[in-house]
Image 1 (cartoon, rainbow, N blue to C red):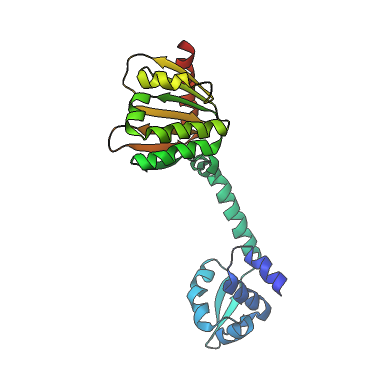
Image 2: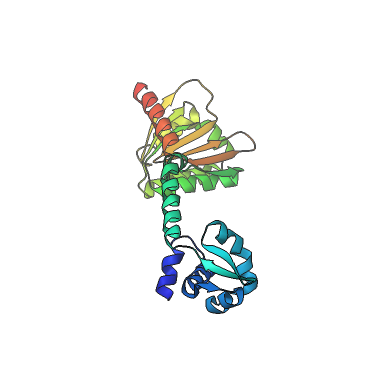
Length: 241
C-alpha cells in the first residue's frame, strides 16, 4: 500500500489526494463516506480538493438511483499529466537558465562606517590570505587612522606572509612607508599628482575600498568580474610606472 502510495505521490499528488485516489481505484464506485473510511481522509478534507481532482479527470461523480458516487479516472491520466509537466518544464529551461547564476558568482557587498569600522575592513582583507594589489594615499590614511594601529596592521600582514603591491601617491608619509617595504613584505611604486584620498585593495575575487574623507566609510565587494577588471586596470598602470 505505502509503496503504491509513494508511486502515486511522485506523479504530482499530495498525501491526502493520493490516498483518496488510491481508495477510489480500489472501491470502484464509492460514496463519500466509503471513500473517507477507506482512505483515512476526512470527508470535509476531501471536499477541499474534490473539484480540482475532478478538473484533472482523476475523479468523477456518477449518479445512480438518486445517489452520488465517486469513481476514479484512468491511472494513465496521471502519467500523461506528469509527462506534460515535464515537457513544459523542459521548454521553460532555456528561460530559467538565463535567470540562474551560480551562487558562488553572486555579488556580495559589506559596508564599514567610521574609523573603528575601517580597522575591521583591513582585518577582513588579511583573513583571506591572498596577495593584495592596491592604490594608496598614505598621507590621508595616516592622517585619518591611528598611526600605531596601522603600522601594527602592516606588521600583522607581514607575519601572515601576505605580499602587498602598492601604487601610492607620493608624499612624506608615503616615503616613510616605502622605506619599510622590505621588512613589511611590500613593493611600493610612488606617483606624483592626483588626489587619491581613497585606498583600493584588490585580492582574488574581492575589492576593498576605504575612503579617508568624513564620515570615513569603506566597502568590500565580492564579485569575480569586478575584481578581475580592477586588477587588469591596476596591472596596466603598474607596468607603466
